[in-house]
Length: 380
Image (cartoon, one colour):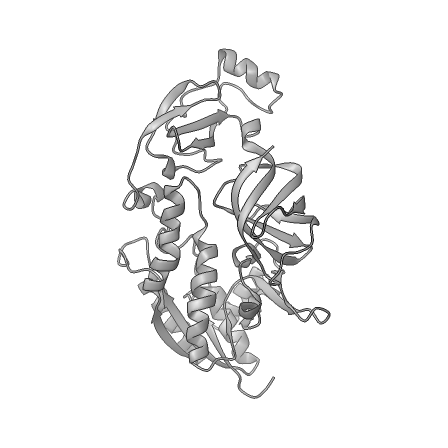
């Protein structure tokens, strides 16, 4: 390492980015902290705590002994992330704004800002790793060493230029070790609770938030036999596999529906089995629900994905890999095929539960995250 290389660290106010900054300073880098403000609407509410987070980030910078700058990316976030988020929900899909935020804000707008500050690289508190493959000369995105915290799923759209300029120090550690380091050096946020979700939603009731931006269009909720059993408030407000908030919890399977479920051999189906969202028909504005976690309508053996993005800059060869169709899901064995540029298909060895259009299918070769795409549909 050349003397005093400048690294700009994204300080969120959380413990992971704080320990990231500490580790890099210990390694001899010149470290500058940047606090990113990505949301301004109702920023003073109980649900979006960016002001509190900045105070925490500034306190961390003071303890570590680094400078911190407050940068506002709210306009970029609204244009590049939130607008797409709303378009996807209005189309009946369920997007993952954290993935788009990483690709468009944290590793684009933030990276560009850091380069203007003369940084050699940027660093964040993500649980992932970057490795230069000596054989191919390409940078690889790897899973974090803590399997319970691995965040490579959210980073799969990073390209070679972004990976080559990024460090993930805590990706080499387990969360317990990160907490231990934070306590050891006296960081004020050593015991701070991990944040959940994105700032503009935070801990608030999701439907309440979405209702401010998307109009409601009520319609029928139907079961697999075509019977209307309730009314939904608007298809945009539901996602596949959803169990809570359907308003039909008191309706039990009985009679023909119970016999049909039992005939299919579904585990545990009975009069008190919960209901799940299984399909959304935008043309008829119908929400389809089924009873039983293992109902066939909730299981898919294959999926199609579009808007593909590959970390290596080119798609991997067709063949056998593993994939996740949602965060915190175990890797699922699958076969990758291509039919047209920018898209791919996966066929799984075992059916996958509630494969959801708008979410990302992310491909892995062992510990290497290859990239992925946005799920456009699921098939048997």
